[in-house]
Image (tube, rainbow, N blue to C red):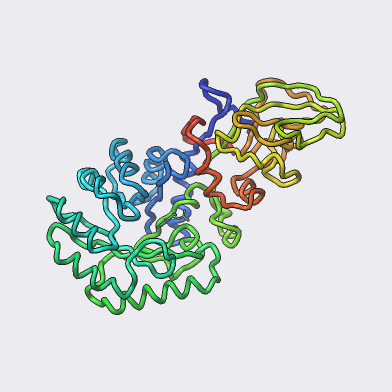
Length: 386
Ligand SMILES: Cc1ncc(COP(=O)(O)O)c(C=O)c1O
């Protein structure tokens, strides 16, 4: 179970378990009882959009979601033919690409509807986003009937395929905002009656797992598909998910240091005893946050070498970090797991999860995996032993 996932460009690799993507899509579909559209924006949350999208469709997803037109174009170039929804309105300069690549636009303003209608030569299906309380994008519920009428005036160049909203607090299933937003959305659907679009979608990962009333025609699942919990409020529902990204490296240098000496920029860590330092060639330019090494005793502020947790000491530098290995026999080339699991000397499994980094850094797992930079090669595998 120890890592061997490096490639020959450098001693650090993000291995992407495509079987885990398939498994997680099936798990989310089973838990929600609805279809799944796989959210692969931001290069598949840092996992590699095209490979993830292909695996997600293999695993039963029926559509894909992106944030930007060029993200959708990349999926088409990779040969993926499934429906691709673009969240959010886009610059007018992108609309010809959007249309030529058969991407599905989100619409929430009459001006954007008109710009799309002007350019579309064939009927173009659109999804209408309603802002029921996220206050990010979307048409206000009381303006939605007017927008739908404007869209209908562009028939047959535009057709309204779906209407959707997005919950702000789905990762806290008992938060009153969830009920408030769903009530606003359902009141609008009641008002629209038979003129409501045929397809309705609401839930993200957390809602798919935890909020039955947010499961409509399909769920838009991102983070859970990557095997990461949307937040502590739904951790208990994530046991069936498998982590997808494993971040591993190799020890590049080993050196003894004496008690009383310091390490890394600012000398913020002092060694109380003689010890051995292993240098790992991965740093904040790769997405390992600088602060991780200054948060001692928090899971995630360490790495796994030889099946044991070893603390990162001193600030993480741009390309390298240092690990305190005590008096253990560490060698150049030893496997280092930053996110993932190793087998401990007693045969048990030790694991560091993206969620552990997130907890140590007071953020969310999304930010951790999206932050793993493009300097780290992504190596898709059919299956990896976490
Ligand atoms: C509109 C919309 N739907 C769905 C998602 C997927 O969310 P999650 O990754 O929590 O499943 C996102 C992601 O931010 C989103 O912006």
